[in-house]
Length: 129
Image (tube, rainbow, N blue to C red; front, side):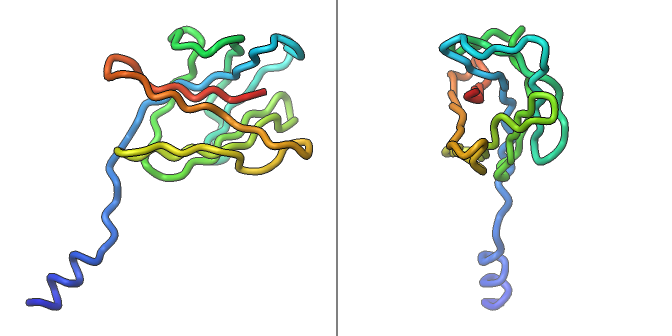
């Protein structure tokens, strides 16, 4: 009996957290905006649509590409055409969130900004261009 209790208590429990997140590209200086090329969002190597560009942090539902993420660490990539412009990761659990550079793009660090809003709003993730 003790052995069975020890076995079940040592099993890793999966975090059931799922979070709906709005994604967009943040370009605060307004320079280098290329309207001819779409910004494509890839989460864990799967295409999830295009992203809008904003010059300021936004909660505008018309600009956000909403995706539901579980508590795993997710690879977030943004491509413009075939060019990778951002490679970050995002992990959200019931108690915390983490994000950062997945790999350098063009020899420089890139990133994003996760903003958890109140209960009436979904969190947002701004990808820096």
